[in-house]
Image (cartoon, helix red, strand yellow):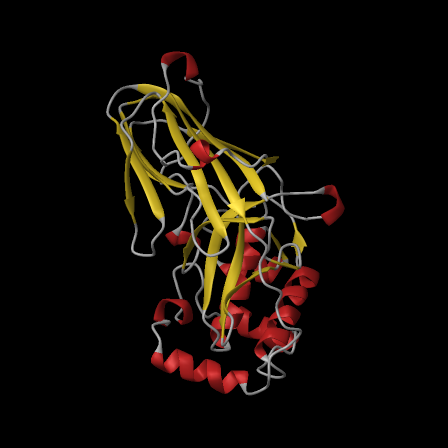
Length: 320
């Protein structure tokens, strides 16, 4: 399956600011069953865009606009191919727990098992696990499917109840939140159980027939757990599904703090607002020439500049 992705972030300032410095994580990863065939990144006002990789292997673009401006638009466009994933077994043997513990002991899973900035071990997390009777039992894959469903049933999907920097206790207390909150809670539960878990930032292609709860015009988040004999497996507790051919992976990290789509600072005394638009549409298979087009950052020509709205200091977008 091929998807065309457009992710537009618009910042508007209440007064002119003198400089913006920003890093962006919007380029889909190429690994496993996913290939990013094309990627373009544009800013208005114009900026020279540089590219690097963070310590987790995510592509990071960054730029500096050292001039007065009242708006900033960041537009990312990608063409992504997703292949079918091999089917998972209905369950794993009970001995998979021992195999998992051995892998953890020998492997480098420290970042995926320890508490992280957005996912501390809190009394409310343990209380939730006790209330839901979540313990090591059965096999790991069956248990993770159950946890995925439990979070879906236990929490109402409700935007604007939590914020981008809300601790997991806010959603645990209110039993409401968005995909960012549900992913953090599921990761916290898995780490307590000794299952390596990581946060995935990306996009979800929405179809009416799937009855997804998540917001279609925003970025999305889910989790991946490492299982013996299988590797990393994606779970989407917001929509009670396994991550599959509709989930487009952009970045992975310990939690949201490692992978925000945008993060930056600006110089100036001004209030700021943020607006995000995400559009994902099925695409035709590209020609061989198109498929070989190198991935590049780019700066638009003058007639491509889009006058924008919105931003925030340490600008970050909550994933819906």
